[in-house]
Length: 490
Ligand SMILES: Cc1cc2nc3c(=O)[nH]c(=O)nc-3n(C[C@H](O)[C@H](O)[C@H](O)COP(=O)(O)OP(=O)(O)OC[C@H]3O[C@@H](n4cnc5c(N)ncnc54)[C@H](O)[C@@H]3O)c2cc1C
Image (cartoon, rainbow, N blue to C red; front, side, top):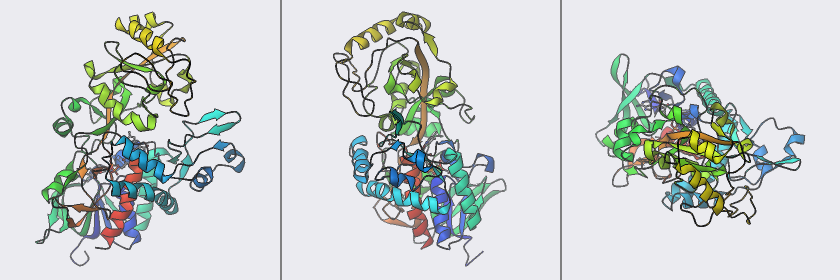
């Protein structure tokens, strides 16, 4: 024990946000203890369940090649990648969040995403080019500029393992099966430690500063119903079972200010059978079903219920889970025809779709009499005179039907027709606590709570209504660096 503190900096949680804060603080020569509720074998928080996609601004291929490994020169020449500027990302953030994203935090997230990618690489994280959603153009391969062009080697598990290795080598102490239950305060209201619960009972751990990086409340069934609304208790968490809102509760107990979209969350389509698996059980197969823009979606009555072509997948997928949850039986079907099945994400191969040679056959197999009419009306409404171009918002929509499909509309008419059953998977919650640009937690009067910092999904104020893929890891690591550096300076 040094000067009556156990650690200079205590970090609560051990996901990517937490470990970034811990490594940064340790680089500043602070002693760092990381408290993790899960056992070692389940470590890594939500990060472990991700594909490790990382969003950042860049000037095009040459910029991106600076970060990724093992792309031989010859192969590199075959890729086409347009610039993705900080302005483009920032403006899109404001658009998808209906101008509710905190402008200062969002600007910091965007501008610091690229320096943070460089920092992660310098620390020892390995990145690879993400070619999964690329398209062939002659003998070249076009990478989607607005999509994620880079992910950590080994996906989320690889990123998590790399961060644990780096932290361990630098002398960060990770204490597993140790749940933070209460923040300790001094007489002036400053936070100076944490009460934890482990198998021996309760004890206090003292520190000069505490960084909360222990996620949102998506794994807390009661809070989901309470804050997100009726029905959300039935949504299936896609990630860790340990994010139950503990950090939020602890922060509010010391006066933290709520921020962001407390009735909103990131939710997408997942395999129907997996959406019914009991919470807490690990899902054994790839479950995401994010390709609705390639076809149509209908509910159990055989009726379409939203615009499948509103925007690119990366901007819309995180709000479609909500639409499914609102349907009868909280279920839906994604229907594709033979023209597009080869474009489906590889995750789809983990399920066996219902397959049919005609619309009538599909309607009969799904026991959905209304489906034939839905598809006939949809097919008749497709603007076939507008050229199809999946690289842009092509405006090839439907006319005269509600809801319409705004882009990439194609008739459902070429066998085999396939239908995948989907349910709602919740990824993480948007509501959180308010921080400033130093990652200090603010109280209800807008003043920093001395000694208390936060990063990652526990932070509110950025995501509202929608999310942009790859932004979660970027957010946690950008503010993790800021929180770690400032906490070390306490
Ligand atoms: C299936 C899935 C796929 C995703 N894909 C991507 C992607 O490709 N790219 C991207 O950018 N984002 C993705 N995300 C989001 C991303 O995982 C997070 O935004 C990012 O990892 C930051 O999370 P975090 O560190 O704040 O929280 P987490 O990674 O969830 O870490 C929180 C940690 O806190 C611990 N904890 C909770 N309560 C306590 C307590 N009381 N005491 C101690 N410890 C506690 C938890 O056990 C957990 O380890 C995905 C999420 C999921 C679920």
